[in-house]
Length: 72
Image (cartoon, rainbow, N blue to C red; front, side, top):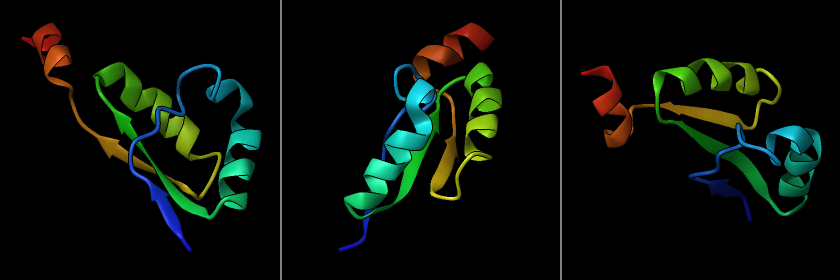
């Protein structure tokens, strides 16, 4: 079975600090894509770097409602 993790913050520790191992374990369990949501402008930059590390990572660029308050 091929699985998609639809919401995983790989940009946060400890996942970010152990990214190769996290991705390897996910693949072993049938996860073919991991959708990583960006929630504010700062996270957009960080996630762009994370996505370059693996083809299994898909990004969802957006703004969380709480973050929108920062930009008004």
